[in-house]
Structure formats: C-alpha cells, structure tokens
Image (tube, rainbow, N blue to C red; front, side, top):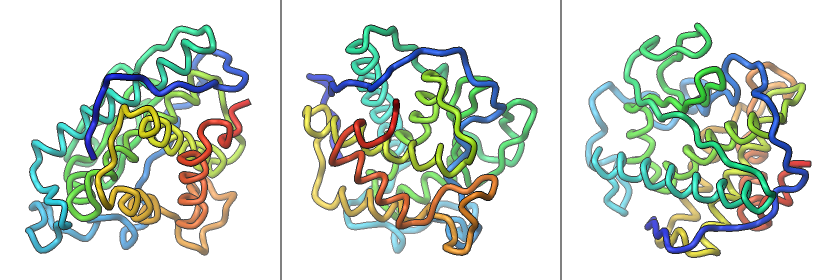
Length: 247
C-alpha cells in the first residue's frame, strides 16, 4: 500500500456535533481477541521468521513504523477534511504509543495487556503492542496496519462526536465502518494507492480479529464476529460515512 498526500479525501459527516469527551476510561476497546484468534498471538516473543511472511515482503520493523506514520497522517488529513466541511475544528489525538510488556502503558489507571491495540479517551492516545502488531503486519500484510490505525482513530472520532452506545459491539462495528470509510475515501481521492492484494489483506485482517461465533453480542467487550466486522468495514469502504450511522 502506498500513501500519497496531494489531495484530502472529503465527504460530509452527517449531524456532526463536537461534544465534550465522553467519560469513559478507555473508549474504543482494542482489537485483541481470544488467544487462538489473534494474529501472531501464539508466536514467541522473537519476531516471526520468513516462513510467516507474505509475498509482499512486508518484513522490517522500519517499514512497519513508516506504515504507522503514513496511516496516522492519512487518517488525520481525512478527518480534518470531514470536520472542516461540517464547519468544525478538528483536534488530532495527542500521540501514538507502542509498548511491549503488560502494564507498560495504562489508561485511566487500568494497565493495558499485551496482544492488543486501544484508543484511550482519558489520555487521548492510541497504544499498541508492537510485538503483536508487527507479527500481524508480517503475517497479514501492510494493509492491516492501515486498518488497525483507522479502527482505533475512529474511536477517537466517536469521542469527539459524543457518540456513546449501550453495548460495546455497537461502538466497535461502527468503528469498523468508519475505518472502512476513511480507507475507501482516501483511495478514491488518491490520498492512498492500493497495491495488488491489499483488499484481500483488509478482509483477512478484519476477519482475524473477529469474536468467537459463540460470543454473546451483548457481552461486555464484544466486537462482532468475523462476518459482522468485515461486512461493516466494507460497507464503509464502498459507501463512505453515510453507511456508518453517525447521526
């Protein structure tokens, strides 16, 4: 996946209302699932070897870090354009924090676990387990990084819009739709250029972080099954933000 920044992706955010931060300790939850479901979750602490690497040669930590930076840049340009079109001022998140150990980073006094990525509303930051994320990047492909960042950034946008659902799964599936919209709109505006196989990587990456099919939809922390999550992601990807029930 290549990033180009000549033009911003634009489109209306329906009913855009900037509200005070929702008082949630860790808005947005994370992408992590039960141990057997996580990309790279059963991989030892050492980085995966070439046998787990896809044909697109996404292997180096430096490339991963550049993709994170590119994904952040594209997301912030995209959301700044949406807010501007609605006559509102956009405020980017404060920072992105990589971590390696349980408890190395906390959100609202709650230690963040390994094998996860999360948006923390209290500190207004995104944090991710770098070992887990690099393993997923190597096994799924670089498109996963853009999805991961887009999903967590969507949680920051939900907080900025004052969106707060009764059930976690509603919040998570909307974030998947918003991540799809940011990516699809950015491709259509030529802010992003897809490489061959990137759409398959999106589909594989989103499915990899789906809940177990037996997970109750109303359970705290539920994110949605692989089918639900990919459906919502591609609704946003193909139909933009109007598919995401923003107001």
